[in-house]
Length: 252
Image (cartoon, rainbow, N blue to C red; front, top):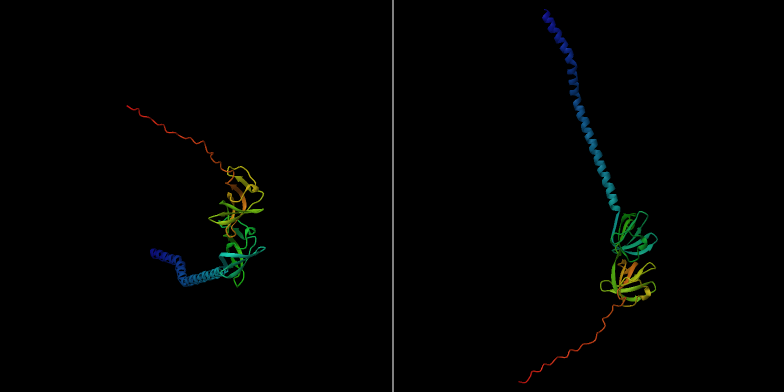
């Protein structure tokens, strides 16, 4: 009898201990469909947000793409303050510049608008600021005509003016050379000279900045005259006449 009571007590105790677990498992089974539905809803919301971000990015990208302005090999037709008029393929563009505009020379050296001239060839990068796409706010202008480098230019003097002279070479034809008080004039032997010593037909070497379009050399650093001083000529020495010696043969 005691044994039966013991077994009954253990059975009741086990039922009490296991009952919450059974209840929890049943409740969890009932929550699973709800959890799956919430996950699906979250995935759909995430997809919608990603799609919205993509569409917004594409719209902004297309807007920026339509605003991008580029002119390659345009010609400056007018300069008014900080505004350039540039012609390309029969179309005239108004190019505005500001403090954020970068100016460069043909070889990528730093430049400024003061160096630009009408007739120069330029590349322009910036953005259109009007619907007609004829007005540009430039961010970079590269002047293809200004060879901003202190290279070597050789030629013969053909014309002399007060503040410039013209040299001629087979490679570049006539080039106008502008000089200032800081320009050094030297002879072939590096001896100093003055501009008045430079004469027509003298062979010279110029170090300065070449404007390809205008065929001008500016900011001239040095002018070297290879014709001065005159090269010495060898003096003709006395002529020595060699008289052949006749040897007589004795008569036997």
